[in-house]
Image (cartoon, rainbow, N blue to C red; front, side, top):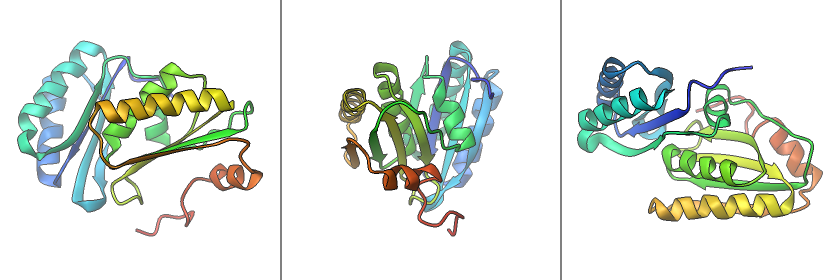
Length: 200
């Protein structure tokens, strides 16, 4: 099983690719952190995910923000990130736990604001993270799906909505589907894409 890179996790979304690579260079040089995932997403933006021990991650995050300046579209620093987040972003694996019959869905305009909300949901409610997609095939947006008993999923979605609102997020959406039909579970079991193979 893939190990968590450390308690801290940070994600930065840059508006353009050239400053994104400059920021990546700066944060990697600043402190000993693990660069977990980087690359372009829709709309020509550049997304960086890195983690490690709290002190080094905080130093690299500050250096990244200083270097990026006005090119930062969104960012999040989680000093003690929920352990499932990094693995979900890196692997894109669909996870189907057995207990429960209720689905919770979250969508946000940018990956960092969604990651922050999912972190709050997973820490505060007994739910499982089924899928976390950040930017790929979503026009730069991000989605997550949660699964569990109805009251737990409702609590998780409430926590996520509170996180969105605290962050001042404007373009977000959530839904809770109690007693989800088998068709819903089957649809998400192989991923939430319409085309199973990415077509652009």
